[in-house]
Image (tube, rainbow over all chains, first blue to last red):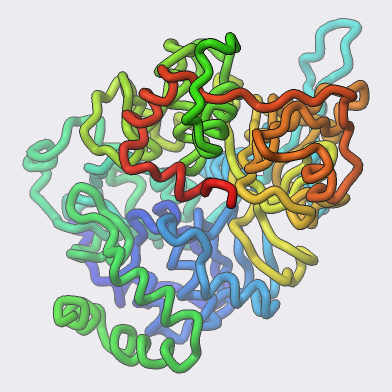
Length: 288
Length: 249
């Protein structure tokens, strides 16, 4: 079955108010072309679940986010994301769920296994418990005789209405491949997502028989049962990194971060890069 | 340390790097992880000298064998440690991380998340990141490049790393540009372990925003040995440590 689609057609399946998981990590292998397509849409009131980078900054700046579930938001080489900072300091994100990084993995993993929760120690005693008063603990049912049962944090499962990840290669049926050093938690977003809106964008769509040309079978962590739509989107993670196809565009990221700190500069940045289609964006990046 | 191996050419950054390395002494064959230049240098110095079995990463996704200079890309990979394996390793307790903190209280509760009220902070920082999971599962030491009462506060604005009063696993030490601190007190609150050369106990007390336990005899942090200086020059050939910790005026 051919699952090829486009970023705009993929985003057209979304509705305002949905919960959306975005793969990658910080400013690494983010499905930026899909994020840019959301910026072009009239979607609002989204719940965003992610290890945050410029995706969060851009969506916050565009007023798309009603709720954010995160462990951090960073541009990596630039530690603090300026749009996210402005949104937090301006109080413009109505609802926030700040988790430990491992808790976020557990929430997605529980969602992908259809479990209501998974237990962990990560988070106990920390401010995460204070700012998320709905979090519950469970007592271990396996306490040794005469010992107190250990109390563990029960991280509630997250289920997603839509998931976006960006891979290096994929075939038209949705078998997808990461060629870089880390898959991050991309498979878990797809696993935790309802069938119908699980999208993989990739640098290049290849025939199935060519999937092992550039990487070993260990890189085939995403199979077609986890994917509903495949989008060929060269340079689609720009300006985040997509090793080994390309590194982060540090110069561009620096310009982005600088522009984000000043409304006038940001308006100019938007009109140069974000006013048109994905093809227009890529053309503007090439013209730099 | 035997006086005859002391090297009079130790600069403050060298002494700090040695103190960071000392944090990992006795750790053995676990993941010694440093966040930022100085902690990374400390972990790599420890591995190159007195903790040869410790495992260090390139900060991306690989364990590296042998000495890896800061910023170098030519490396011998001995293992794969993507983030999911980092979480597995840390939840398994086989890690000691040294990281930064924007605020810390006397129990060692630390904050890298935000300054001010969490609901609408004065300054949004990183978020809690892996702080809660790290601090409940394994040893966490801290590197504070600018010791001040803005960092060492009565109460942190958001507890991202838990201290001794909230069930923290343990904080072997806190290293600053002025001193080495630990929690070796009956109530596990912060104590002054040593002051760096040229820094007085009063200087440290004044730059700390809570009551610090000060023993009657506070030693001076040890200088780097000649061997350690040679290793530091190899691991940090561009002298990034001197930029992070400038010589006192």
